[in-house]
Image (cartoon, rainbow over all chains, first blue to last red):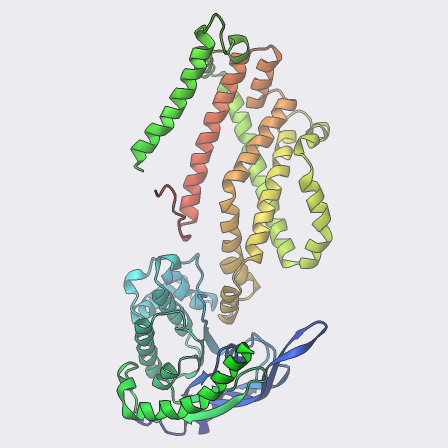
Length: 276
Length: 262
């Protein structure tokens, strides 16, 4: 079980299913901009799926649609077999930007999710301390976000999301603004926490190496507009993995080459349009 | 700059200013006083007047009246500003409808309202409170409005995905954000509450610092005017320290802007 990264997780009841999803941004008096078109994908219940694609291809838009923050123009979002209406209550969302409340301490930020669910404050704080420990911030409980580094703020955000035990994790380039070393440390931290209960993860990134190191499957999106999923690569690297050491594995290089060959064409397309 | 050095320099400014005043009003230069005491009084006389006011206890009554007026003006104005700020920020239609009227009233010099308030509310403290309220209300209102509008969309989306309902959003997101904006203008709004009180007293009353100054002015008692102004200035400084203390206490979560770094 632990070793079989290549078991067919997608065959199980899918946590997320997108069917012919189309997302358009309308502006009065102008033709609608079709960001995402006819996109279908599934994420299995215990599956870690990454989406990579050139900048501006609508990866984040797709994630927002799954979270229920955006209404699709056509097509459906299903979460555990039920069509999504309104916000996705099963999902925890880790944003690219800082989304923690700047007016609350790290501890209060993490406890917040439990408090609003009606748990007594003392109990929420106690559990929040445990989670701060898990993300390595036990000593920083009383700090405010502006007193923490970028990486530390991300850890607070991660604990804030995970303490609610969401069945689905949506991550929008969560480690994007961090430096390379911190990204790998955060990747390992994420893998460690994920291995404990294997939630369904939809992870958006522009970093192909990060995607391969973390995921069970890597999806490639085409350049926008009318972006869609054009590639689906299974990552058959054994778990548990170490996000930094796995990059030295020969199989990692094979996968990287195969996926990059497909991705490069799309990236070049984006730059071609920018230059024109 | 060290604290002591800063304080020494601040004291130096006062010493130099008083010295110039003192020399100008007591030492004849070329046979004339540059600052004739009839118009400028002398530091010694003003000082002795302040001492007498404090010693006889006259000043405390007037101070208390002005303080009560200031506090009431601030509390009522701030409460109104918070209420309407939230309401307008959450209901754009309401804001759009009232926008021209708000701008109109805000552009009005408040002094012209003082006689009206005096007719409506009499010569007691309430006409002064009303004047202060019209000043405080708008500062707090605009700041709370901005505070609610400027909540980061990411923080808001995060809060909603966490499952917050409207009441929880208010408590955990909108309220702290609006408060931080309001407190950033606390010095201004408290200052304006005091201005409202003193100007109101000056224009017609039977007690308060503004009344003291006005009385002295009526009999060309320049020393009395300056003594009143001095008491008022000290009063303002003390209130300002208090506000700073409250601010530091409530806004610990905000990054400190570097002050006095050189």
